[in-house]
Structure formats: structure tokens, C-alpha cells
Image (tube, rainbow, N blue to C red; front, side, top):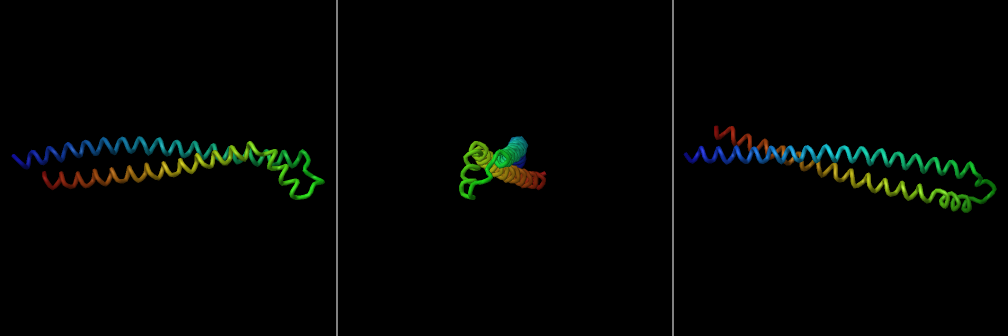
Length: 123
């Protein structure tokens, strides 16, 4: 009778762990999507910054010394620089979140394997 109770408890824990694994899988999918979105936003911000720099140069930074050209270029592209930095920060956070989601999913998967192994020994 005690073996039956232990087996039932193990089965319940397997179900709980399986549900946790499903939750982790959903979180991992969301993290992958957020990472991809952040990467696209970063690439778009980088493109915008490069376009703004090219436009500023085309519109006339000639005839000035290097320091003046750099200062004017930075002034003309300030908004794009800030947008790029912001997108880069969001991307880095998304990378960290993705890695944490991967680790959490792997841990739940291992816990499920361990419980399944225990359950198969009980049977």
C-alpha cells in the first residue's frame, strides 16, 4: 500500500513538473520573440543612425576642421544616437532574458527526467 502511495505522489510531481515545463516553454517562446523583435529594432536604429550621419555629411560639413565636423555631426544625429543606445540596451536585456528562459527550461526538463526515472523504478 505504501508503494502505491509513493507512486501516486511521484505521478503527481511528474504532472506538476510537466506543467512547469510547459510554462517554461511558453516563457522561452516569448523570450525568443522579444529577442528577435529587439534585434530588429536595434538594426533599424543602427540604419537610421547611419542614414542620419550620411545626410549630415551630404548637407555640408566640408570646409570645417575635423573637430568642428565631428561636433556638428554629433549634434545633427543626437536623436538617432539616443535611439540607437536605447535599442541596444533593450536588446541586451532581451538577450539576458532569453538566456534565463533557456536555463529555466533546461532545469525543468532535467527535473522531469529525474522524476520519470524515479517513477519507472517504482513501476
